[in-house]
Structure formats: C-alpha cells, structure tokens
Amino acid sequence: MKLNKVNLGIVCASLFVGVQGFSQNSNVVSAALEFQKYEPAFQKQDLTKAKSYLLEAKKYIDPAMTDESTKTDPKANYYNAVINYSLVEMAGLTSAEDLEVYKNDSILDVIEQSIKHTESKRRYKSDVDLFFNRKVGQAVSVGEMMFKQKKYQMAYAGFAGAYQVKQIANIQEEREAMRTNAIIAARNYIDTLSKSGEPEKAMEFISGALEMFPESEDLAIAGVNIALDNDDLAKAEAYFDAAAKSSPNNKVLFSNMGSIYLTAADKSYADFAAMEITDEGYQAKSDEVEELYAKAESNLQRAIKIDPEYAEAAYNLGVLYLGRGEKLKTTASQMDFNNPDYDKVSARSQEMYKNAIAPLEIYIKQDPNNSGVLNVLFQVHRNAGNTEKAIEYKKRADAAAAEGK
Image (cartoon, rainbow, N blue to C red; front, side):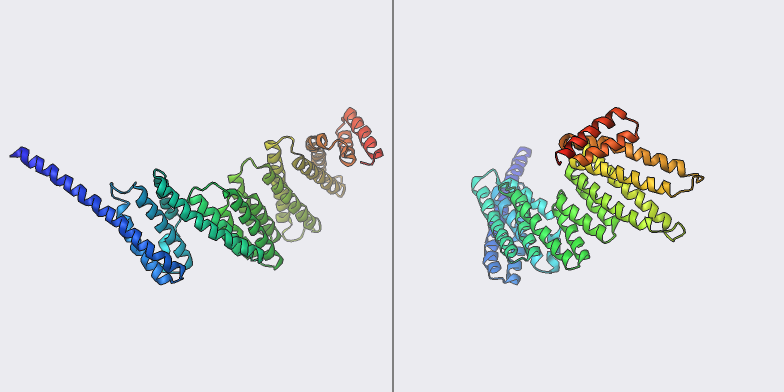
C-alpha cells in the first residue's frame, strides 16, 4: 500500500506539472492575442484602448515569466519583450499613474533579458529584430524630418530613441551612426538655446543628454562652456567629471578642459588685477585665480601623460607657464624691494619660465620652424642659464624668421 501511495503521488505530481505547463502556454497565447489587439488601437492613436490591451497582455505574460516551463521559452520571451517595450513607449506618451512604473530604467533590463532568450529560436529572434527595427525606422524618420525642419530637440529625441532601441535589442548595425546623429542634433539644439539666451534650459538639456551619452566629450565641453559663461564653475566641473570618468584616456577631452580652464583663469586674473588689496573679495578672487590655473595645468599635464607627443596640449601648457611667469614678474616689479614677498614672487616667476621649456620642446618637435616658439625657447633657456641651448634656439629662430616662418 505504501508503494502505491508513492506511485500515486508521482502520477499526481506529473499531472500537476502538465496542467501548469498548459496553463502557462495558455497565458502566452492570451498575451499574444491581447497584444495583437493593442497594435491597431495604438496606430489609430486610441491610447485608452491601447493601454487597456497592453495591461491585459501584461497580466497574462507575467505568470509565464515565473513558471519553469515557459520562463526561458523563446515565444514567451518575445511577447514579454514587445509587451514591456510597448508599455515603456506608452508611459512616455501619457501621464497615466498606472504606467509610472514603466518609466523606471529597470524595466529595460527585463526587456534585454527576454530578447536574449529569443536568440535560441530563429523565428522569434527574427520577430524581435523585425519589431525593433520597425521602431528604429520610425524613430530615424522622426529624427531626419525634424532635423530638416531645424527642430533640433525633436531630432535629438528621434536619433537618441533609435540608438536606445538598438541598444536594448542588441542591434549593432548603424548604432554608432545613431549616436553620432543624436549628438549632432543635440549640439545644434544647445547652440540654438545659447543664442536665444536660455543657458539654464541648455544646461538642463545637456544633463539629460549626458545620461544617455555619458562618454560624449562634445556634450560635456558644451556644458562646461555654458556653465563657465554663466559663472557656474560647480556645474562646469560636474559635466567634466562625468565625461572624464567615462573617458579616462581621452587626451582631447583633458586638453580641451585645460584650455577652457586657462581661458577662465586669464579672465579671472584680469578682474583680479583691476582690484585693490583693500577691496572686498580680493583674497577670494586671488584664490579663484590660483585654483583655475592649477586645474588648467593639471588637465593639460594629464593630456600629455596620455600622449607625450600631444602638441596642442603641450603648446597650451607652455603658454600657461609663460603667462604665469610674466604676470608674476609684473607683480614683483610693482613691489617694494623691502617687501618680504618680493624674493618669493620673483623666484616663482623664474620657476614658471623654466617650467615652460619642457612642453614647448614637445611642441617644437612637431612644428620645428615656428620662429615665435623658437624665440621663446631661446629666451627661457637664456634666463635659465642654459647658454648652449639658448644659442641653438636663437640660430634656429633667426633661420626660420629669414624664411618667413
């Protein structure tokens, strides 16, 4: 009797599994039927009905995604992917509270995982590609049409949407082209906002665009420039830090940032030079100048560390040191000889001139007949007491000048 009870238990368990499998397959079919009702309603822009069909489809597909018999099934996962994607799409079109959950990025992980499960069966992989390529095509059409009409924000939305769909569906073809198009549209929109005197709106847009494209130095630099133009150094640094974190070996990014900080430092110094020592904010402005020059120096040095022959960064770093040396020399000349800081300021000026030698020698290797830079190298070597080097650069400078270079 005991054996019979065990056997009966096995039979019942088998029947239970069979019924459960049938139930979940039925759920997949029901989800598919509801989704088929959704598409024509969506195309007719009847969003109320479309939403209702989608939520009903979601109600059926969710149990299938937790059941052992169907959770990795390609067909079930195809419908899970397209239903959830359509809910994300619908959430972006309406303000319905019951769709708020689909504005969360975590839903994209669900979609991506389901797409992976379709790859084992050619039919459903093909269906996934067809569905998402159709979405890409629609987004690209919007992007192109809006760009031609100079509605750059909408053009950005179209191209960025196409890029994101390709990312979600793991479609590599032309993905980088969509990224490039989106950033071009974004730059045009940012320029439009800047010209119309809307910097806050521009920075808000840039912040959102950088969430989509965190490695874009174009967007980061645009944000930095606008923030600096509006004296918002904190925001400028936030934009830069985001890009630097994603592109730690991007020499152009660090060089550009160094140049931007150098321009900002020179501008701040001009304001500082016009102040009297008794003016309110004198010390704060002095500290600001030092901080900006230090950041310019650090970023230009970082660019050269990435590429020791990077001429643009080397030139700007040399200009920074020369400018600092000249400014400190001017400051020292205006001091009383009895001023306790006179020797320190004079020594620092000489140090800056010496610092200019290394980066300018990097630059002159790639532009060997630049008479202006050759003359500067002659002067700084002479000041540093490097007589042989000074004579060498003097001869080269004279020869280049004679040839009109």
